Length: 220
Ligand SMILES: Nc1ncnc2c1ncn2[C@@H]1O[C@H](COP(=O)(O)OP(=O)(O)OP(=O)(O)O)[C@@H](O)[C@H]1O
Ligand SMILES: [Mg+2]
Image: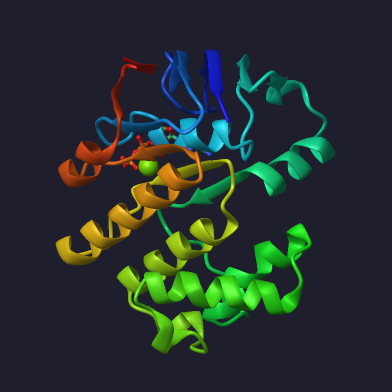
């Protein structure tokens, strides 16, 4: 799915006068991958949250193919997200009341995939993330890196048309980092998934087909 954003502005209350996002515009073709890097606090997570519909811009528009995402009602936005977007968060945001495999199965179940199929897909993704032994573990016992890998497996399982990943390798050592980023890019290429990754990690940036930086509220 093609992504286009036009002149996105965002300012938080009590934040500096200039605002965090100051006219972000770019376009990314279906199946392409983009890295966004830049200093801490520049607004990278804010931008991903807005692109994914988790936060609203003050002004500007986001299009997925020809659909103006910014103008959809909240209900339609939620449905669009469920069917098309996966988000790997800077902190993995796992559901503490569910174990590892359930965390991966839940979004699939919400989308309407039956229980057995969801379980099979989850097992396959846990295997690829080297986490099969933890399938029945409560997420509270996972290390930071393991939790991050569950978050990545959860996004990969959905095979959404778009994946947003915020510092996906931030908690990982270089071996695990290489392995998950290879897996992520491989899945995206196979399934024509559009991938936007925020990262400082040179190994990650190197794997993306397009590379951009965020500076002074703009993507350049
Ligand atoms: N909900 C909020 N309310 C007020 N200010 C916010 C909010 N969310 C983010 N900010 C501010 O917006 C700026 C950009 O934050 P953001 O998290 O997008 O940065 P970032 O580029 O992702 O940084 P990092 O690399 O450290 O993750 C920061 O100054 C932050 O304090
Ligand atoms: Mg961030």
